[in-house]
Amino acid sequence: MTWKHYSLEQTATRFDNSRDYTIGIEEEFQILDPNTLELTSRLEDLKAIAHKKLGTFVQGELIASEVEISTGKCENIAAAEADLTEKRRLLAESASKLGVRLGTTGTHPFSDWKAQRILETHHYREVEKRVRYCAWHNLTYGMHTHVGIRGRERMIAVFNSLRGYMPAILALSANSPFSEGQYTYLHSTRAQIFTRSFPRGNIPGPFRNWDDYATFIDSLFVTNSISEPTQVWWSLRPHPLFGTLEIRICDSQTNIRDTVAISALVVALVARLSTDYDEGRKLEIINTRELDENIWRATRFGLSGNLADFKKRREVPATDVIRELIEFTGVMNERLGLEKYINRLAEILDDGNGAQRQIRLYEEKLDVAAVFSDVLESSPFI
Image 1 (spheres, helix red, strand yellow):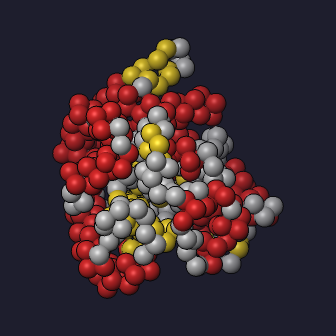
Image 2 (spheres, helix red, strand yellow):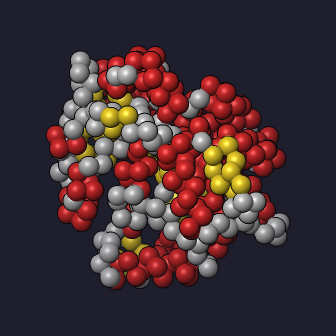
Image 3 (cartoon, one colour):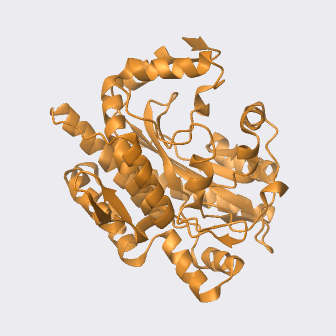
């Protein structure tokens, strides 16, 4: 099963040879006019400056008003924090030299999608050709966390269970209550635009084993549903080239401390589920219809709402679900050096996440642009 430079056999080998709990983080940012805070299509100019120090760790992402940075493969969360902090600093310096600003919310609050330019690369032109309006309308900015996990069958088992935790992670990371100049009343408008619009942007049902997963991916190729593996845009996916589980459900975070704290919780979850699997404990697997309901709840209400506990037939505040996750993963915190970062989550639960902070400002100002300006002024990029 080989297509050009990709084969499922090689992907399986990458997982079999992967190292547990290595970490990589990717962040997508808006490129802004410094005066109007509108999106500006300066990606090529920004990359030309940033590439000198960031190399391939700075990339474009679909539209010319978006830039992405990524860490390398980091051995632990402290190394990922240091790497990401340095790359944010270098990107900010490059933006300053160019005379643009960087936006750090999950959607741009008011720019017109019709004014954006798709990048002139084969990859993104192929994306545009396949999905058209969905690509044009996609002014969204996410944060992705990669976690290494060894063993193809072990990875599938953890993937199946990790699906059920994604609504809580989405609620925690929600940071996009505005789009097209409107207060959408969604806490993660990014999730609604991307996961409900892009094909294969959701989270699939569980797989029986690696062969079940590989057969499905193979079928996507042979039916011409995809032309390359990264066109599987699931919000949680086995990364076909890195041998990692990639958690793609999060909004871009304004505060880098939030980025690292959320990533730390993701690492703790993967480690706890992997350990349970190794020790023969049964991993809980949620069905897709229950998962979809809670994804909607997290999209709509974020940390301000409730998630559904279908086993107990009751609602649970999203903040309580996060606290339960912190307790569930607690055994991993000392082992993996996560305590400092997990402690930041308590501050988020007390003070509010990005969406809650933006909504509070909007209720005072009733002006989306003013809120965006305040967010950028009050939250340092590094």
